[in-house]
Amino acid sequence: MRSEVKRSEGTSPEGTSAACKSPVYMGIDVAKRTLDAAVICAETGQVRAREETANTPAGHRRLVEQARAYTVERVVMEATGTYHLHIAKAVHEAGLPVSIVNPLQVKRFAQLKQRRAKTDREDAALLAAYGREEEPEESEPPHPEQAKLKQIATLIEQLTRQRTALKNQQQAEETCPDRARVCHEVLTDQIQTLTRNIDQLKEEQERIAHEAFAQAKALAESVIGIGPRITCALLAYAGDLSGFTSHKQLTAFMGLDPRVHQSGTSRGPRGITKRGHKRLRTLFYMGAHSARVYNRACKALYQRLRAKGKAKKVALIAVANKLIKQVFAVIKSKTTFDNDRYSYTNQPMNQPGT
Image (tube, rainbow, N blue to C red; front, side):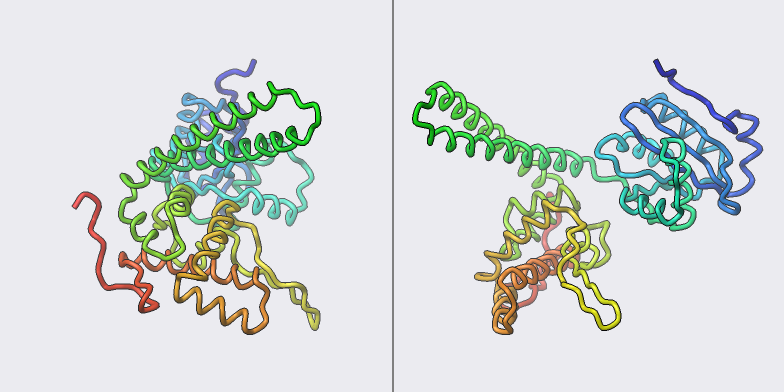
């Protein structure tokens, strides 16, 4: 059994105090049960200290104490589902700058450095080195209600997939000449149970979104093509867009930004990167089907691209991008969408509770 805290070299109080004179970067490799941390010098890039501890409140306090002994430029960790959330929150509450980075970016950084070792201990040092060389942006702690919305949205998606699988299985059972009646009854009961659970989750999702993000929700839903389903997902995964400074960032976050392949005279196929949030990308693409009919700006764009011979899918992706721009604009400007004028009304939305 692992002890609550396991110290490594350079982590004694004496060694810590001696290492406080110049700025450092701390990398934390997060696992379900353990945390491995490494501290490197901002000037030389040399490892000054290492620490292994449990991924528990006591372990979080231990790492925060170690970090406070230094002048920390940045604490860097990967996004690991839900395992990193508690330690990230502890670091935020301690007033230390933290960056939660994309694991793919760190993987590419490791390949660039031709790292051969792959251990939790080495990954912690790699994260610290990534922070030192790449200087990732500081991550802001998510809104507490946004975290709840994200949990609900994730569960709705999982239960919906399960229900679809059961419906497909039920249809397959009906084609059997000698099917067991009990199978049909059980599948029907399971489908009905999942439907009730999904409806319950959607009601709670709508309630939280309305109470916590009333203004952003109303503004987003004023855009033709954006309904409650898309809005709740947007608030769950992107919040009120306060963390985005341009619509291009939001587009890239969803993976709808263009991908270009060009080398010399060679021109590869164009498309979208698909490196962003798949669920949001899917929902905005679905919303584009309605927007191309009822949203005047989107309809004009769709018709213009189709007239140029563009494929239907290409035109719909362009409409989805237009929807992102419109949603970003109305939320940032706090004005409702005006479909009749291709623009936005100059009527600020009332603040929540007024």
